[in-house]
Length: 272
Image (tube, rainbow, N blue to C red):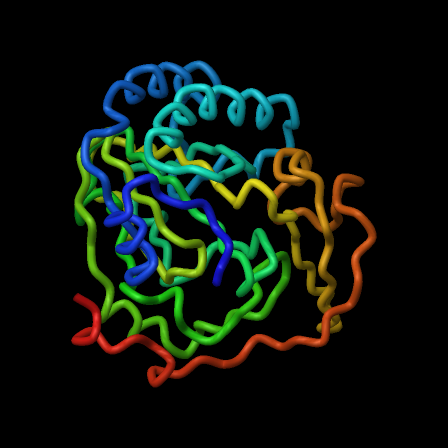
C-alpha cells in the first residue's frame, strides 16, 4: 500500500488511485483574488517564458511566497485531503510568448517512492486552456516503471515524449479550480499564446509522516539520496550547483533510470 495524503471523499481518492489525478472545480475560487494580490506584491511583472519562484536565489523572497500561498490554500487543501504535510508552495507563470512550453515530464522525487507518493496541488489564477498553458496529464502515468527525478538525474522520458504527448488528456480549468496529481504522473503544458500572463499557485504535499528526500546525480553519474529538512525546499535554489545544509549527508544509491519506451506507457483504452 502506497503511503500518501488521502482524499476525505472516497470516490475522489479512488479516482486519484486509478488515474493519478483529480480535478475539483471552483473549490479554491475565494483564494484567487488574494493570491493575485500576493503575486503582484511579491513577484510583480511576469517574465517571458516559463518562470517558477523556487528558481530564485533570494531566500527571503521564497520564504515569503511559500508562507503567503500556504496561508491562502491550506484551508482548501484541508477541505479535500487528510494526513498531509506541505513541503513547498510556489508561483509558476508563463509569459506571453513561445518560450514557455513544458514537454512531458514528472516532477521531482520528494519521498521514498514507490513506498510513498507525493502530490501536486495546482490552482490556476486565470482561466486556462490550450491557448495559454493548460495542463495535460497522462492518465495512469503514475504506474509506469520506477524512476528517480532530482538534480542532474538522467531523463528517462527522452525517447517517449512524443508518444506520451499523444496519449495525454488536456484539462481546461477556470480560475480557482484545483488539479491534484501524483508527482509521478507525466504531465506537460504548451506555451502561452494569449495576451495575458498565465499564473498558477501550487503546493507540494507529502504524507504527514513521510521523510522528505532529494536526489542528486553528479557529472560522473553517481546518484546520492539526501534526507532533507522541510526547509530545504526554500533554502535550495533549484538548478544550483550545490545543496544547502538542510540537505543532510547523502548516501550513494545503486540505481539507474530506465530508458523508457512506448511499451511502458499505459494503454489509453484501459483508463476510464
